[in-house]
Image (tube, rainbow, N blue to C red; front, side, top):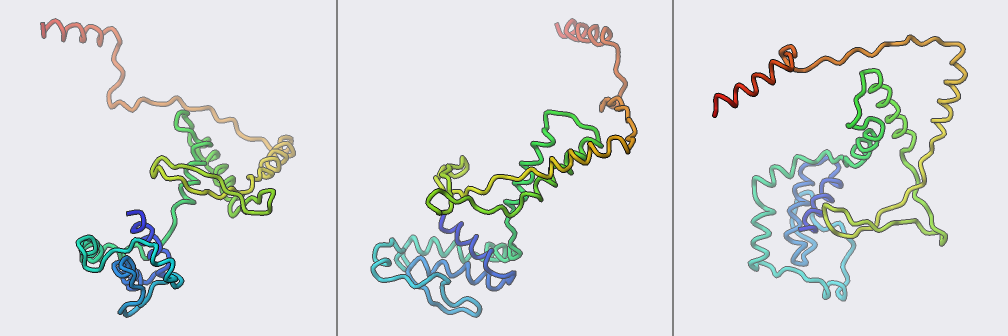
Length: 224
């Protein structure tokens, strides 16, 4: 199953936005799994990987062509409805960067705290600056001059993977901003805005507590 998911990922990321190439490269999986790497096709005629040497091929567990397992795989891969859906992710876009930003945004705007509109706008702006200032960081190099990795085991998959370790984030922009605040504190006058009292979201005005307590006991007296 993991290999199938990886293949779909590869197809979407390497089709160049072409739906026909995406679909044909997806279909090629039924040939690759039985050790056939050249096949008929209009746009995609052979696997993109390097040739597999015979000694390597002999060690891999290929499916047997037209076996029960291979037929079951073909039934899924060649399904017309699935192939119609497969053509849709041709505009491949990795959402990992967006997910990283959302995680960072929660550090500036934690859900457990309440912020008014100005505070929310300012904190979001800080999160955007932090995110943009630390894009495209290079990968760390260990003492042996090799790229650094760390081993992690995501809860979603339960499989150990090697994750690149990037250079530490740069927060010089924070100090520059603080310096600007100190420079401008004597030359600018910011309006002091009183925080408005938050209203209640209930559609009716708040009744008296004693009336509600009396109603509560009356309801139980009737039920008894």
